[in-house]
Length: 294
Image (cartoon, rainbow, N blue to C red):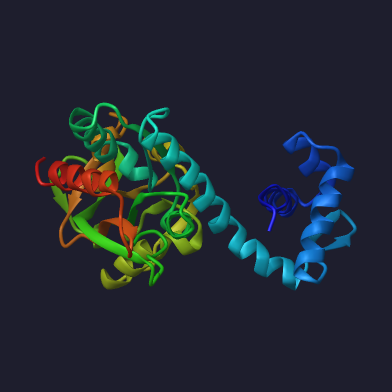
């Protein structure tokens, strides 16, 4: 199977258009069409079907697309590792993490890792756990820091999880809130509050925790980004739950208080279930070391 044609097919499916893919790849539209035709001849069936706004993969194309990312990622990895072995390129470690790990945990781990492996280039990407785990399985990442919240940690047979820490959630309140003067509060004391939260699926831990406290949270403001959540809370429009990993990075004009019997999310380093690279194992050790100290 021609790898150039496979990359073109992948790009066509991603953009939904042969002309858009050709423009992105720097080919002519007819060149991309010929590449797709070669693939279809090799696989003995159509890979794309036209619709009103472009093209989409056929069932056969969907099967090929499912393999394309893994195939091309392994090829790119092989080229990179050969270049590293030849000394023409520095070793690269590809790391992904949930956004809240970026605030404090990842920079500290990267500092420790860089001191031990100064010649290694680390690339970093953020995403929620259900996005990061498929990238890990496809070979696009060497390691990912994931959590079971939100919206839960999908089970993947090809992933090995290394527990890093249990991360209790805190209550974030407007600075002038009546409970802001307390060190520890009960979640039930916030039963009459308006909540600032993510979309419904991501709010599952909040809903479950509030149910155990005997009430249903009223979520009037749906906001997926932490900058926006903090802004709404600081302005007095509601309260929210904040992971412990994020507390050090929060703005100073909100009050963050511990919860009695708080909901807890679990944080893991995710590695391929098979052999992991030495660099991925070393970065996991760096993560373990920084989570072991405050």
